[in-house]
Length: 376
Image (cartoon, rainbow, N blue to C red):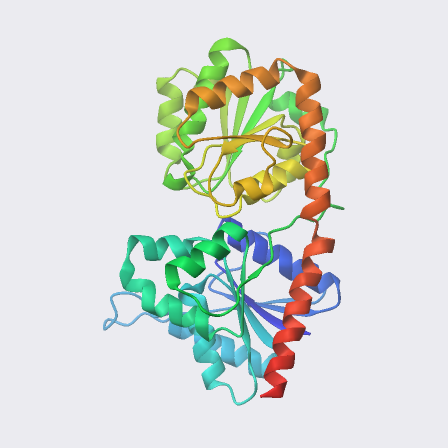
């Protein structure tokens, strides 16, 4: 199949999932065309079967903001025609599925499109109900719709009063490529004294409660030596760095910024802190689990579908800094239990979230959508 994929190219779960999906599909012999305003962060254009088409948006004095959705729709139709795409697969309803709808309407040939919902589609409407009609229209107009968790599927149906079916296709990892490696030199660089390494991975938006991660670590550091790696970047980084200085743990916390090769850092980590206010799935937790790093996380959104509380990780109410810190200290004091939980985390990823299980679900959906389109 020839598939066009559109996603936000910035550092975030949806862009990562869309990019990994494209890479996996290309490895299975499909031709993948990414269409966005910038190259997605993990996209390797040297891989056979992968192409990137940049959406250029002209600025005119008439517009306060460049009309990206319209430029994207035009580019989608252009690529669909020149590359003879079979379908479009867009990640996020706003504005991508709206653009795909326009591209389908402009196309002189059948051009079905599939929308994958990642979460902010729903919270955006929660914050501004003015987006509800256009988001509902985009979802209902899609030829196929998927959600990354049962939580998100149910919330979408309730928020938008959706009458069409939404398929659950969870996020995934490549279990053959994602595995823990022994990297003693790298570990010694961050923890030369051999102390445990904790990790937080996110886009540092307020919803990730990055300051809670610093607060939790500060309580741990008062009881025992440890280090914290803060992977990512975003609007809360400066506040997190300031909080680390105020709590006198700046010397034990390393902000490594955005990383293309987070896998090496996860391989040297012992425990993840994920105190988010909301996670529609929890891709960071799943990636850590693949590296035998259990997560101490919040019991919100789709996280309970990823983490088995008490087995492959530990779940707490949002804002329970004391509880999460105490649980981390207990685990760090029992290396055998920590290792066992790490093994169970990896087993959980193997059993439920490997690319070999998930990618065929997308391929089957593509074939089903194409079959329906051909029958019209």
